[in-house]
Amino acid sequence: MSRRVVRQSKFRHVFGQAAKADQAYEDIRVSKVTWDSAFCAVNPKFLAIIVEAGGGGAFIVLPLAKTGRVDKNYPLVTGHTGPVLDIDWCPHNDNVIASASDDTTVMVWQIPDYTPVRNITEPVITLEGHSKRVGILSWHPTARNVLLSAGGDNVIIVWNVGTGEVLLSLDDIHPDVIHSVCWNSNGSLLATTCKDKTLRIIDPRKSQVVAERARPHEGARPLRAVFTADGKLLSTGFSRMSERQLALWDPNNFEEPVALQEMDTSNGVLLPFYDPDSSIVYLCGKGDSSIRYFEITEEPPFVHYLNTFSSKEPQRGMGFMPKRGLDVSKCEIARFYKLHERKCEPIVMTVPRKSDLFQDDLYPDTPGPEPALEADEWLSGQDADPVLISLKEGYVPPKHRELRVTKRNILDVRPPAITLTPSPASCSLPWSRLSSTCQQQHTLETLLEEIKALRERVQAQEERITALENMLCEVVDGTD
Image 1: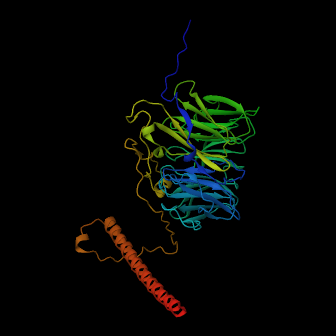
Image 2: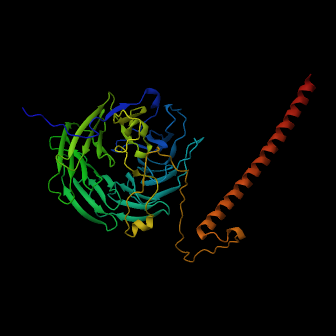
Image 3: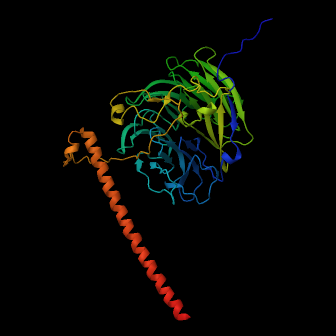
């Protein structure tokens, strides 16, 4: 009698667990817009959720620690005149988020570390270039300030957020509405799916389709695609009989899928979340109450079903935490933020381990917040892999950095005249450090002036209050 050999994998026993009730975010009016985006974005600092708002579009940004019931008057990020359709945190600055809207604009926001007193209404920059609603956003994984947007006008625009300029516009590749866009690991290629049922791999800097596959899934419902760590493609779609499918493709041979998994019959579009460190893909269907996850390997059958996390309530959307935001001491390998109708519930995926030591095999070095390239370098043809960090000591976020937008004046081609009178101590400093020192000196002087003005204002108010109190005492004495 032959014994079945069980496949060896450290992720075979991954299990999901919903957070306790006091760890959820309650009383949030999640957006009811019919759009197939995640409606939620999360990073190691903040949770952002697209919400219902009258007279335009809005989303709420909460510090991760602010769990429990959210005050109905909690400040929102408002500024769009139409519903917000997608949001995405910048991978290189945890205080910067981009939002796309039905009003055809993309806005980039600076979120302060403190809780604002009133709604945030002024974006750092507004990007205008689409002629119809913008429904997809994706930051470049390795280049600073490079943001991609895709709209209902079938156009993909790549922006330099630092200058507000259009770097690239891909306007003659897609004949119909774009359903999804994904960068590969170093940002040299794009994978797109479209209403014309075609899966494309695009070199954006050459505006060329490198490879394409018509009807990777036979069904009529929208497709989604993401790159794997080794350059293959994972696509989700529907069969002709409306069965939901997961397929693995080799771009060098697009004729047949490397592997194909059929799941269930449902109308909900599957949102794939891929973790390159563990090669696990998590499938979250809109309207489902479950998360399925599969491990992708290099040997047949390539796609291995691991497990399903099930709950009672359907999900309206889903946020996926970057690896550097996880709790490595609890062997946490993924964390989702599941949107209900009125709340957001964290779901933690862990690998059971008895040891309290750092698990090197679960946590290889992962992409950190430092960009590998500048926008101009990437546009000129350079590619670079993400700058990796170790999670051994637990990730410590960098100090708050501000997004600065530099608007160039194309009429002024002369270099600006700079007059500096360096002190003797600073004469030996390199130019970059000298410039930085002067900026810091200027900032310090500005702050000191503001503090002085505030002090004078407070003193004047105190004198006014004292005078009013004296008048009140005189009135009271006269009455007696």
